[in-house]
Image 1 (tube, rainbow, N blue to C red):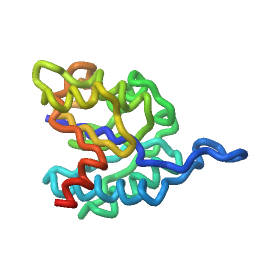
Image 2 (tube, rainbow, N blue to C red):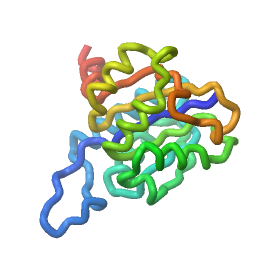
Image 3 (cartoon, rainbow, N blue to C red):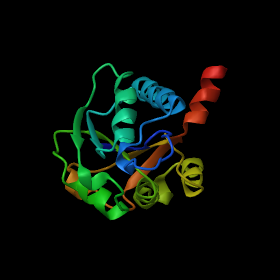
Length: 178
């Protein structure tokens, strides 16, 4: 059994003249949201042991916020191909992972993360509510978690994942307000 968690980077500042898109940092709310997602992953009982991320500033900051809340930070791979990647490129990057890792956290950008999540989910075995929520869009800072009945990452394929949950930062804010 393998697990994949897909995380869209948290809210970033708007691009300003002369600023490369890859250099956009998170907003203060984005930093808070990343830490909230990290706390959520820590509480899940199955935190990731590997993070595969785009090297952009906003994905690095998102990952740093998540890791700040984990008892044991995962190993990290910053892959330039993840920046602005399609679902097919994300799938290829996951298929190439070392099999010693059981749970990978992929931190990337839309539309690729959204399309990968929608393509990875096997509707017949996935949480119907989570599938519907992903179909409606993949929010900044949102996290989708999948379980795959596979032994090696090479076996990962579209339609092979059981979507077990989808959480947005605003869901976590509501939860902490209760």
